[in-house]
Image 1: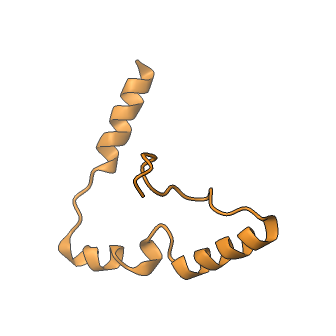
Image 2: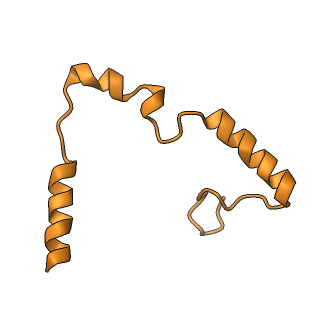
Image 3: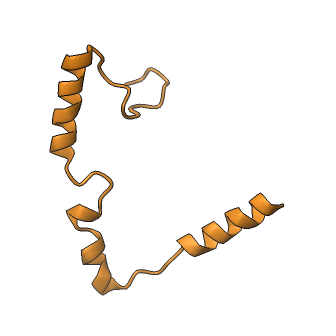
Length: 67
């Protein structure tokens, strides 16, 4: 029961209306999950050379083999 109440509280709190004037600020590069995608690609390439392992750091595809 406590988990259900906690989930509902988080769901209600996470919903918010964003004013149109604030949308420009929220869409800036610094507000993205990965603000430096080029740097992430470079780090992933260095990691693949160093450890001999490629991939495994992000999810790609749906697992159906149709990529």
